Structures are given as C-alpha cells and as structure tokens.
Image (tube, rainbow, N blue to C red; front, side, top):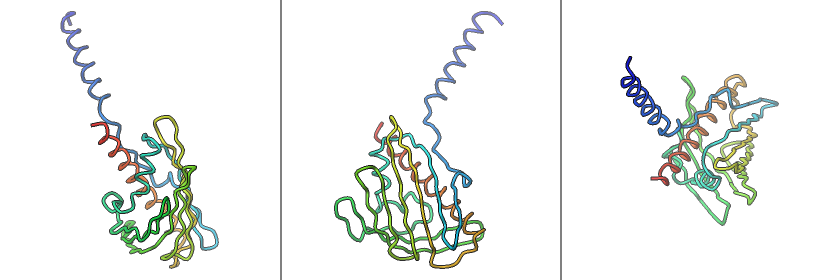
Length: 191
C-alpha cells in the first residue's frame, strides 16, 4: 500500500471514529437483576442504585413531573395530581403492569414530598396495605446518583417467587424509562 492510500485510509478511519464518538451515549437500561428485592413476612423490600448523566435539578424535574409520566413510563395509563402545595403532592395513578403472561391492574394514591436535601419520600394512601419509598438524589459533577428504597405490603397476596421477579422487572423498566426521559430532556436543552 503506498503512502497516499495509507494516509487516505487513516483519515477515513479517524473520520468514522469521530462520528461514532459524537453519537449520544445509549440510554441507560437497568437489568432486572440490578434491582435487589427481598421478601420477608409478606412485605417486599427493594433497592436499586444507578448514575444518570444529567444534572440533579433535571433529574428532580422528571421525578416530580407526575402529570406527564404516562407519556414515558410503561404501563402507567393515568397520573393525576389531586393536590399540590410547595414540594408536596397528592398523586393518583393507575395502569397495568405485565410480566410474561401475567397482567396486574393497579390504582393507587400516594403522598409525595421532595425534601431540601434531594430526597423524595412517598407514602401509600390507597391501593396497598403499606408502602413507603425513599429516593435519594445526589449531584456528582454533571451526573446524578439515584438511590431508591421501597417497602411494600401489597393488598393482594402474590407468591413470593413471582412477586420478587415481577418487582425486579417493573422497577428496572420504570427507572430505565425515567433515565431515558431525563437524557431526552437534556438532549433537548442542548439543541
């Protein structure tokens, strides 16, 4: 190969590599097994943690955009804010969850509060016997660390083996959708 052809080949390779590096990063997708779920005495305990490449303020905007959530959360058909004062929301949601051949309709109400330290705490008011979740958001440079914990005692009994897998699947899907929406909004601000 002569010098001219090698230079042309190297230039083409660099251009192609540059184009690949300029593409936006693939949206974050959590695998089911990245969600820890434990079942004890009829109660499910879940935990997940991941980093999303958006500022904390944008992450919080998406996490509290309850009225628009049906547009980007799979299975969520309706989400209404019944009352809102400051950083407290009374939210009603309904939809259908699916896992393999299983389908589960849900309707619930929650009281949700965004605290000054970056936590979002939710308490179930209906649709469950007991539900409490805490989502910690922590700024880390231009990204945000999300650390979510959930304690859930469902209204209906679900076999533990199925319930654990179902919850892992749903939480992974919901948080992947939230991360995708965060990244989509960040890209929208750049253009």
